[in-house]
Image (cartoon, one colour):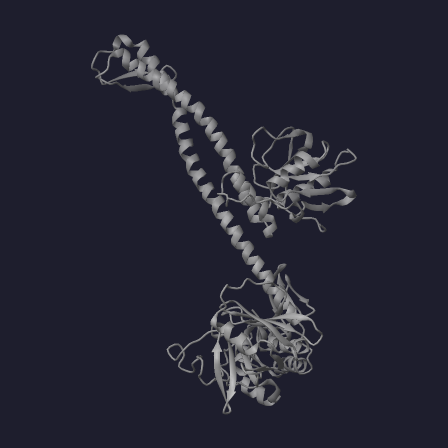
Length: 587
């Protein structure tokens, strides 16, 4: 993510306005990477300062979320409470172009004497840390850190109580504010001629992340992979102009937060967006730097939770599908063998007709087929059985195969329906977009005994459920699309009127689609084609070019007794082939 030195600058600028001179009311450590400070600001407003030393998501922000805390506060939390609770934040600073912030706090010791302490937040990837320091004999001493380590882990420094604090090694790079264009340009052109400019800028300038250098090159109007050897004076001037804009925005506190979207999905955040994003990319301005982080990581947390839950449900359904597929393969083979029972009948009939040719103890006999002239059939006999027993054996095998075929045909038919039902569930899960979409599917899995119940009856809150997809077409036609099996049933069996048009992809898992037809007029074929394209889009065949979609009136759609959710039969239907697509506007 893009929590670079520039984003920390913007975060601290905003935090100073909100948090300086505030009192620390409460301190919590909900997990091994996170510290929360409950602050009472000068405006008598309570805010929560969120500090993270997570190896991938370290950051500094304000949060409105609630966190579960351990029953026993960790040692570092106890140290912070001992020294900082009821303390006053008097300064918030950043090391130049570093991802290191320092919060100075005036507090009191156990006997009430004033003392000044320093909370250092080091945002350094897997080496991120939060440390509490005090000043002693002009040196800063570590009181504790959220992550302790000795020289066994780091030869450069130790993070242990009582040790002298050594800040991370300074970057051997130039600060943007202190470099002139000629010097910058000469230094840049000294790099290997084949080195990409995006990498060279990161090596040259302190605090410039790969994301930021890539944005600088794009905003300068240069190719993303441009190398040092391709730089002329024009290209250098464009790069320098972009650097000066960053410098000015930083100095004048003009950095603004943006969300970055790719193909509609929230991907990142930044305070320095691409001026001319590519197709499918979008930047959206946010009102608060600190709240941008809270919204972003909350959204990502919800997305991760959704993906994890959907993944676990998909795994269950796919395992059931695999078992059903293997079962069907065996049953189909047995059914095919059973259908070959006619050969036993013919053999029994041949033996009966030519009984006079049979002798006790014979092992086989070859006779001409009744049905194919010239075809000779070798019939193997059991020499231990009588002639009549051998004849009865073949008629018995014929009757058994016919009974087996009858039973297996029903089983295969039912199991094929069950397999299609599982495919429908899989499709609904794959098209689910939120945790709320998963709730009715989870409940259905429990009800169909595909998933073990937790013991507690989970009720789906109707107020929390998402409504069917709704699309408005020309001439006032409304298209409704079910999100899951239960909603499909509700649309088709309860909400839709008899003259409404019902659509579903032909033999392909997908949603029930309804064209509302309140005036009971003949629905134009153009509307049916659009609705069919919507049905194809909300199906497993979304990526196909030509999808068959069946359509008929609601009065021709029935739900058989005992059928699973979402499963119906229909009559007098027509089929249309369409390309999956959504209309331009939808709710």
